[in-house]
Image 1 (cartoon, rainbow over the protein chains, first blue to last red):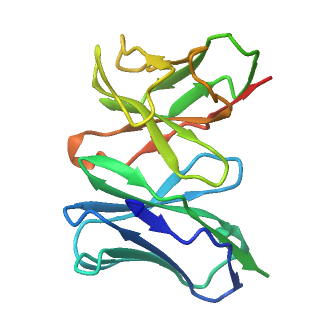
Image 2: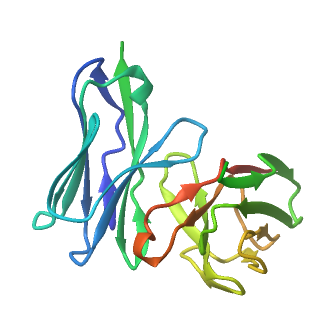
Length: 108
Length: 114
């Protein structure tokens, strides 16, 4: 079992829809959770982090954490073609572990 | 503007050669990291450093070496012992121990072995 698992996709959604990206992790002691966005050929950039159970909203992005079920998700409301990228989930307990990423494609 | 500068952006190497990738930051961050990314894969940690003159091996350190003589600089050498060095190399820094997962990345260096 991988320490951090993501569906590699591609996930395709129409413009204006909600994109839902999911991530599961194996270490119950994980303390903090991060979402990075990576455009093709570019380096990752941090878009959200969450430390406590529940939801955290930042503009069109919402991170959701459920420690009991060991998953963290990222919702993107009103998806735009510019959101098309690979989204990397990262989980930290001591060291930071990255998932392989989910490719999102938003179709106009 | 603060940030992380990596160079070169593209590098070609013949088998058997060592190459050094540069990473400089002016964010005043204590911690710096080197990651490797292969197509369709997540990031794998090569080396990290939390303070000057100290660094630790990550998950895939074999065939790589680093130094941290200055806070701003964390160069990575890919040695001839690295069996499959073709990859996208990313340098990152973070503000401190309580924010260790909040990484700021450079633009990356793409190494191709001919």
